[in-house]
Image (cartoon, rainbow, N blue to C red; front, side):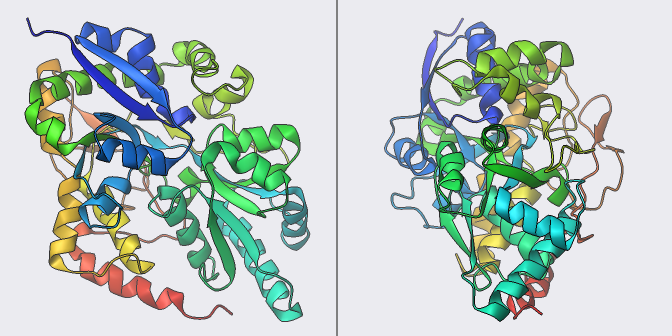
Length: 412
C-alpha cells in the first residue's frame, strides 16, 4: 500500500469549492491516502502565483487560468494542468438597487432571463451615452476568468460593447458586495455566496445567472502544478478519485444541508448556511424574487467534473476575441492540451463509472438532456445552450473566432 501523500491546495471562499472541502471533511481524501490541507486565499492572483512557485500542489482554480499560463499571459507562467473540472455553473450577475430599478423601468421582467435583462441594460447604456452620463462599471474577479468572459459574452450578445460602452474592473470575490454597497461598481459577476450576500444586505439584486447565459458551462477546475503531476501520477490519480466521490456526495440532495453547514464554517466561507445553501439547492432569487428554472450549480451529474477540451478552446476563443492573445495554431493547441481528459479517465476507470468517450463536443448543440457515448454504462449530458442560440464547434475554431470579432463594432 502506498504511503499517505501530503497535498496542499489553495481555494477561494466560494460555494464551488465544495468538492475540495467535502473531500477533506467527509473523509474521501483520507480514504485515498491523501492528507489534504486546504489553504484559504482572498484573490485569484494569489492562487495563481502560489501554485506557480510551488506553495500549492493543487488548487481550486479559474478554468481559463491554466490556459493563460500556457500562453505566457501570467507573471510566472508555470505550467498548470486541469485534469478535472470542479462542477458546472455557479456564477451570477448582481446589480445595484439603483441600476436594477432603472432596468425594471425599461423592461419589467424578472425571470433571470439574460436576453430581457440584456435588452434593458442596452437601453440604459444608450441613454447614458446620449446624455453624457458616466459609463456603467462592472466588476469581475480576474481578467482570465469565466466571469470576465461570460459577462462580456452577455453584454456583446445584447449589443453592448464591453470595452467601450461600460467599464470592467477587477476585485476579489469576497469584496464584491462591499464594493457594490460603496458605489464603486454598478454591478458584478461573481460566484456564490457573494451574490446572495449582496441581496441579503440590501445592496443589490441578481439580474441573471451563468447557467442562463450558457447552460451547463464550465467554471472552476482542479489546477495542478505540472511538474508535481509528472513526478506523482499515482498520487494525482488518488486525488482525482477522492474528488470524484466527493462530487457525488455533494450532488445528493440529502447531503445539501450538511454541505451548506460545512461550507458556512469560519475556515471556509464564513457566511450563514442559509445563504450558502441557495447555490447548492438552486434557490437563487432574481431581482423581485423569481427563481431560475435552470440548475444553478451542478457538481457531478452530466459529466460535470470532466475536463472537456472544447471548454478550454472556448475560453481560448474569448481570449482571442477580447485581445488577450493572438490566434495561432500553436496557441490553440497549447490551450487545448491544458485540459487533460486522459489523466481523468486513467484515474477513474478503476471505479467503473460512465465517463465520456470523446475529449471534446460541440458546445451549445444540446437543447435537452441527451445520451452520449461513454466508456462504460450510460451517460446523459444536460442541455448546454447559449442564450443567444450560438453554437461553438471546436473543429471550426477559426470560423467561430472570425464571426465573433465583428461584434466589437459600435452598438446601436
